[in-house]
Length: 347
Image (cartoon, rainbow, N blue to C red; front, side, top):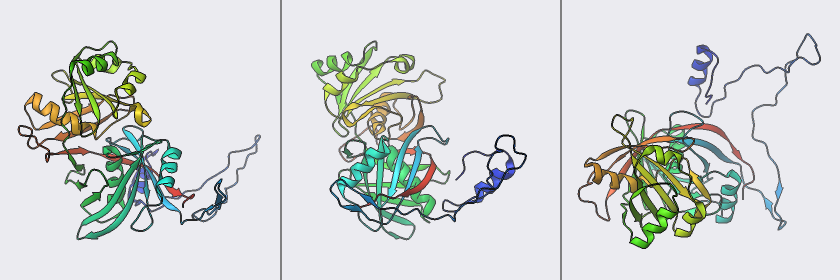
């Protein structure tokens, strides 16, 4: 779907096109060396390019091309939020783990989602879902789940998707009446760390006044609550020191000032999984939602991640007063499909 238009007529035409439709127009070569006439460029019919690739081992990539998308998650505007690639597997299972990791490295985005659709019952779609960074598979990823759901909702007649994952159980995504996507995720509340770990965490965040230090076993993240959003935005983390803490990384967060657009702000640093700073992190809000709901004594937290790209979401914590191992949170956000194409080098 086109993201920009020069006038209202072209915008209307593009809006009517579905995800798999093609909006066409004349293409012209520019005048060359002062020639007064330009010629129309002849294009081949819209079809998938086929190629044969050979791996170093001598084996050939031979599979049918797979649908490939990039999606900006936790935003309603293209070129902001957190970008994830989405690959739709052919059939009800995945390609090999080795191939998916190669694709994750090739995409070089925070995460690439691999989706294998299982079938549907009524307007509920069942699918399997896995996530790969450029260097490793991860157990839970919010923005890449949102991205996968955005693609499936655009392609399928469904109001709910149940993603079955290896490590995080079943993640349900619902399309709300206002168009927002609501993800049902596990709550991962942090607990305070000991004095030694708190000092290590503070040392990894030079120049910040850390008022609370904790850790979430659910995501493997350390959490540092700091005094002001301004200091959070200006900070330069010590990434080797963050990596030395272990786990996935560090979430740094602050309460927004009264009258702000939301309740909290955050930044996330995950050098141990190949992501120095994540633009917008859904899973981090499984940690932040319960933490701040308890602090603010309310069940809905409006959050902004103040990375360079930035993004926004809401976290609903239904039983924030009585959290336990079975507690869940709802992450509400939007997403934008930016590119659509094919993965050709398929095993």
